[in-house]
Amino acid sequence: MDVIVIAVIIFFLAVIFSMLGLGGSLVYVPLFYWLGIDMLIAIPTALLLNGITTSSAAITYYRKKMINFHVAAPFVIASIIGAPIGAYFTKFVPIEILLWILSAVLVFAGVRMLFSGGKNTESEISSISTDNRKSLTIGIFLGFVIGIIAGLLGIGGGVFIVPVLIALGYGAKRASATSAFIVLFSSFSGLFGHLTTGHLDTNLMIYTAIAAFIGGQVGSHLMHSKMKSETIKQMFAVVLWIMAIKLVYGLM
Image 1 (cartoon, rainbow, N blue to C red):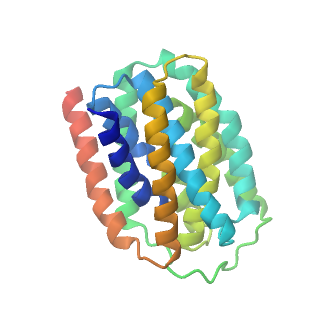
Image 2 (cartoon, rainbow, N blue to C red):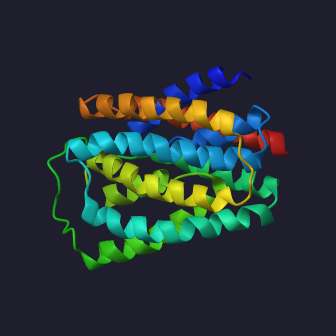
């Protein structure tokens, strides 16, 4: 498929995912795989786009003061450590195993998007303290695990971070904004781990990176302007399940 067409698709995906605090790599990896792009190229490209989408969105969220840096810090530090480890083990894990794991993550993501009952108001933050020791422990542990997953599968981990932040008492919008900030670090850290492999398509990366940045800007501004994301999340949950089913069907 022409790289321009792929870039247009990436733009619309970036718009949607940036509103949810995700980078879009949940879709980028299987999308590239179906287009015939080698998984060893698809994964680092997805990490690049994931980082750019969330970076673009995080710029907007930072200006709107929607990011909680105290909560984000332990996630960021731990994920930076974990991501290169996951990237290193990519070359040792069979492609079929990676696809099975990715399918399971897609199903989980769909369930989370469809049934998450996060707050829609942003009168943050309930009774949660930003220096809570439990939150710090959770952030370090999950950040490390998410970092490994990011490097291994080419995803940023936002699908796990958002529900955790909501469970800790943060509203859906602030959780999404903080997740975007965290994911940009886990994504780029994972990407750096893949740079040594030399499996890169520069032309594909340039065009899709530009599309991802613009899409992230559009999506983050739409989300901040109080556009409801519930319908989008429900529709995308169905899309994620369809993609998971298609992946599993291809593996059987």
